[in-house]
Image: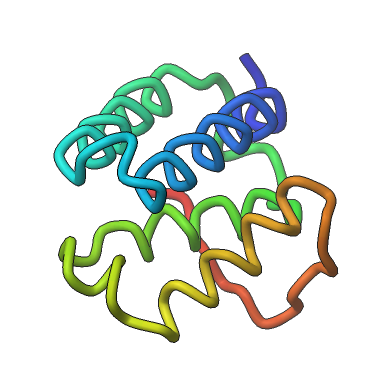
Length: 106
């Protein structure tokens, strides 16, 4: 699987999991397990070091890093909530591309 195929696939899933978490349909622990699953699957992606970053990938990894916060911070921190909401909008082609995002591959 290429980096871009991985990011395309996981972007949809991240959106679903975050929205489910915010709607209290899944727990914080389920969200964190999903993030660990992403890391495990990422380790199997081919040729990571040879593919250039896209805006979508930088945003994806930035969201991933933001979701490493504590449960309280993800739910109650207005800046984190607003940033994740904006970034998810871009991943779902419902918003503009933020230019100041520096998400990095794990």
